[in-house]
Amino acid sequence: VLAVYDPPSIARHFVGEAEADAFAGVFFDRVYWDAMDLGQIREEAFLSAVSVRLPQYGRDLLQRVLREWYRVLVMPGMPALTEALRGQGKHLYLLSNISVDFAAHAREMPMLDKFDGLVMSGPLGIAKPSRAIYRYLLDTYALRAQDCLFIDDREENLFGAAEEGIAGYHFDGNTAALAQALGFSSFLERD
Image (cartoon, rainbow, N blue to C red; front, side):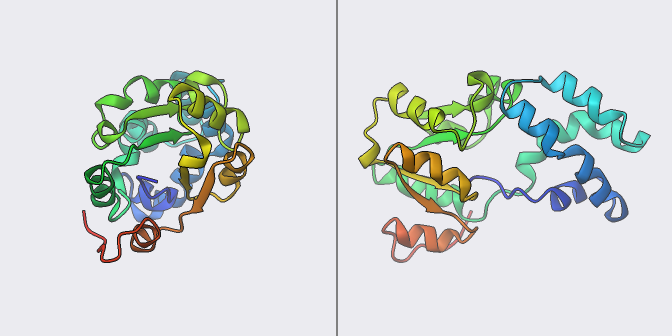
């Protein structure tokens, strides 16, 4: 969990307070995001579908928001925790529900270069919580389920991992608690 997924808060970074909820409701509509996550539609189709539902101010922002939304609210403490884990020699893999277009540029993004491997749902046509994406992760990187811990902020995503024998941690945004669960007794949330 590298970013805080809070659509109204993210929208406030791009539009005024008065427009934020309406913009977020259209831009982050699960109908479109879920289809992109599964590789069923590409960003161009998403932008076309969303633009007709927004006033002009919103249409002008669509490309920018699509390229920058995940950078707006970095999960506090997660960059430092990622570095601490790497410093202990831990192998880190990212398993994300994300579009084909996002996946094509993922390695260029800050912080994603810290991971030993990336599994992105869009290009595969399978998404969390489907058991198949966890199996794909294990097979692709020759991982043993019993050696892995899957961390996610959506509890339902832990179920598919559990079906493959992967232990899960339901992340509630408290990075210090996660760090303690991972064995860092004096970790402070910092970036």
